[in-house]
Amino acid sequence: MKLVDVEKEGSWLYSEWRLTYRVGWSRILSAAELIYRYTKDPEIIVGGAEGDTEISVKDAEEIRELDENGRLTVRGLSEILGVPVMITFYNQLDLVRVTVASATEEFARADYKAFNLSMCQFMDSAEIAMYG
Image (cartoon, rainbow, N blue to C red; front, side, top):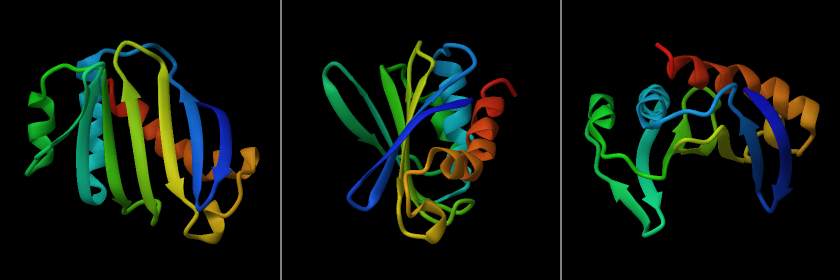
């Protein structure tokens, strides 16, 4: 996965990433399941043209049963990164939007190189999970 851009707005870093390939719903669900497993108090939100809906999920396996939609967001406190995150995947696209709280020194600035070093392995792991 490739970092396209990162910007700071208030106490959040907003970034866009490009997947190697456009992906469909089943691959998005695989990545969301992995991220969900390593997120404290995770929330799942699905959305499309009609709006967003928060989905009640009791365990990660239930994610694979979600009905297809236009986008899927996982948000909560990342146990890996140590900060709140919100990751949105878009069905049939190669776009992923990630919001990270500027709650630690590591995520204090919107510096492309530093942010990429902090996030690239995490995002690559999510992409690899799509094909597992």
